[in-house]
Image (cartoon, rainbow, N blue to C red; front, side, top):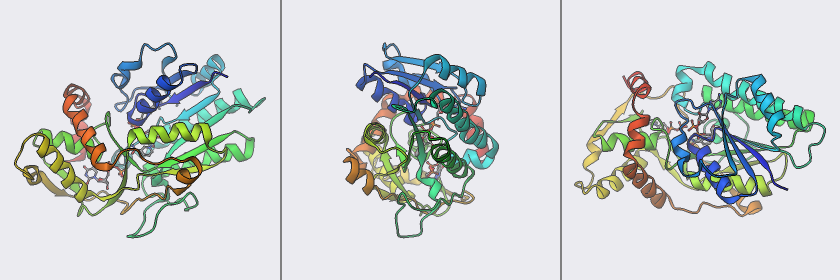
Length: 349
Ligand code: NAD
Ligand code: TYD
C-alpha cells in the first residue's frame, strides 16, 4: 500500500537528508515536507528533488493547532516522521520558552491531530518521533547511554525534547497511538546550520576568524554522519518494533579539542596551508552554562536487532563535509547574512 508520509522539519539539516532519501527511494509513496522555515529551515537544501511527483512542500507552523488538524484531515497522512524542533542548546539558554512552544506544544499538536485522524483504525499508522541522546543528561568519564538509561536533561533544549518524548510515549500507553522513538547522538554533514560546532568552525577557519572553544575543550561528543542517521531512520520506520526506543550513535567519541585539531588538519591540507596553521585561531572562551561533559551512545540494540551500523568513518565523513562547504560557499554566504550576524555577536560578544 502506498504510504502518505508526513516529515516535519524537512527543510532543516537532518530533515532534508531524510526527505531526499525517502523521495528517491520510495517513488510509490508520497512525501509531504511540513516546515515553517525558521532561520534553520532552507528550501535550497532540497533543490534537487523539489519537482519530483511524489513530493509536496507545506509551509506551516506545528504550533498552529487548527491548521495542523486540517492538514491531517485533508491529506490523511498515515505515517509521521517528526523532526521539526528548535535544536540549538545555546539558543535554548537564551530563549527557553520558544523551545517549550515548538518542541513540547508543537509535538502535542501533531500527536492530537494524528490521534483524531487515526483513532478509528490504528493499523498501518506510525508516529515516529526523532529525539536526541541529550535527554539522558551527562555521562562521567566512563559508561554509555542505553535505551533504559533514566532521563536526566540539563539544558532547556534537552528538557523540552525529554518532555516531548514523554508525551509521545504517554499517547501510546494511554490512547494506543502507535509510536517509535529514536535518540541519536551529535550529527554532522552537509547543510548543517553554522551555529553548531563543526560547520561554525569550518566557516570560521575559511574566514580566518577565531574558533571559540567553550571551557577547556575537554567535553566529549559521539559524532555520526547525517546520512547514516537518515539510513537508520528508514530502517527503524520499516523494521522497528512499535512502542520501542532505539539509540543511534556513531561508535565515535571525540573530545572537542581533538576534533577541532583534526578539522584544522584536514582543512589546512585541502587548502595547502602550512600544517597546523589554523591552530592559532583557537580561542578558549567562557564555558556554556550547564555544559554536559560527555555523551556516548550504546548502539548495540539497533545493530543487533536491525543490522544497522555507520557506513562512513569519521575521517571520511569529515572530509566529505569540508568538501561540501568548500563547494557551497554561496549556501554559507546566504545563511550567514542578515539575522545570523546579530545572533553571532550576541552569542560570542
Ligand atoms: P535544524 O534546526 O537544522 O532543523 C529544524 C527544522 O525544523 C528547520 O527546518 C525549521 O524550520 C523547522 N521548524 C522549527 N520550528 C518549527 C515549527 N514551529 N513548525 C514547523 N517547522 C519548524 O535541526 P536538526 O539538527 O536537523 O534536527 C532535527 C531533529 O533531530 C530535531 O528534532 C533534533 O532535536 C533532532 N536531533 C538532532 C541532532 C543533531 O545533532 N543535529 C541529534 C539528535 C537529534
Ligand atoms: P553543539 O554543536 O552545539 O552540539 P551539542 O551542544 O548539542 O552537543 O556543540 C558541540 C560541542 O562543542 C559542545 O560540547 C559545545 C562545544 N562548542 C564549543 O566549544 N564552541 C562553540 O562555539 C560551539 C557552538 C560548541
